[in-house]
Amino acid sequence: MDAFTYQNGQLHAEGAPLAGIAAQFGTPCYVYSRASIEQQFRAWSAALAGQAHLLCFAVKANSNLAVLGLLAKLGAGFDIVSGGELARVLAAGGNPHKVVFSGVGKSVQEMQQALLAGVHCFNIESSAELLRLQQVASRLGIKAKVSFRVNPDVDAKTHPYIATGLKDNKFGIDIESAEALYQQAAELSHIELRGIDCHIGSQLTELAPFLHALSHLLDLQERLAASGIAIKHLNLGGGLGVRYRDETPPSPAEYVNAVRQMLKGRDLTLIFEPGRSVVANAGVLLTKVEHLKHSAHKNFAIVDAAMNDLIRPALYQAWMAIEPVSPRAGEKRCYDLVGPVCETGDFIGKQRELALAEGDLLAVRSAGAYGFSMSSNYNSRPRAAEVLVDGSKCHLVRRRETVDELFAGESLLPDEGG
Ligand code: LLP
Image 1 (cartoon, rainbow, N blue to C red):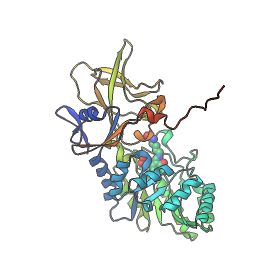
Image 2: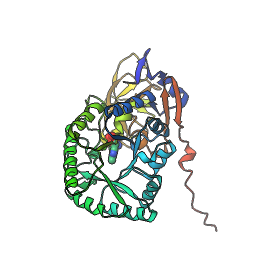
Image 3: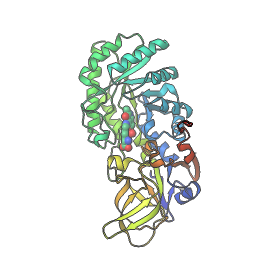
Image 4: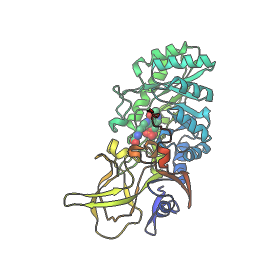
């Protein structure tokens, strides 16, 4: 399902014209489709029907409270990587018992917060982290449920910045040393071993690397069982890719079916941590053309969204589709679409054939994941508004930041007197 379609020559989000949203809430503005988010989450749940499972939405992909709230109502759990994300999940009505806590650098304070909230599992990435968790948990008198994130040394065949399952990456525990760590953990008074975890990268468009990693996990599970350590769950992380341009990633059903085939006969709960595949194509970034700059050599369209609003093109050279909200007749030219930030890397798209005039609205597609959640205030730019569309209703789910808010926490040095 594509929630963003042209109706009478105007791009809509579900039943709401994007031009109306821009007029009401201004630009730049993120627009999400409720139906699209729900449909993607349901596709994952349906694929897992009849199999013990927990679907933990990766909060980092889109952490807006309204989005988290929708998913919580559908029964989602959440994959968090900070105390801040845990606080968001709780504020959105998420169930802490369905939360898994990932990340290589959990602080004492974050461990404490998560233990008190009663999270389902800590995904542990080093022996130092394990010992810290044992200490914090014993101080609180709570048993911490743990899985180890293993690094299966599998090439995810994705952008190097988002590949995480290779030996060279900072993530996980070398699968060869994992057994010893499980043995060590089994001796600790406030650690309860629950699972094996891995996440080999993001925007994977083929099944093979996932299944390769899974085969390593299953081998480890067997070795552990043989040495008396019973594992209850396998967490395969996130990573399922989406179509930005012409990629043909497997659907959640294709992926899950292949996993279920390999699991046959084993009594294991499956955990997944999908982020992008749930929300990427459920969102657009709406932006307005400020100026056109034509020269013999190059054409620039300077738009009001910049790398601080959407960093994926600048950071990963990510290609994201850009569509006019009200396509105009006239000659198309080849444009680089750039933002107002003072960096050459500040672009949203390059070499796009478009017929444009000042004031035109554009929709950057597939911006529902790692869009707003990676935005910043660079160049002292207030962060964009976020709108969630439900049919023809538009809900402002995060108002545009104000300039005052930008430096509300700052102060001048005291007067030196004299
Ligand atoms: N679980 C763990 C432990 C992760 O590190 C990630 C993403 C996920 C789950 C969710 O992965 P997903 O299903 O969304 O692929 N900012 C980058 C993507 C970074 C992904 C980081 N980890 C981008 O915009 O492409």
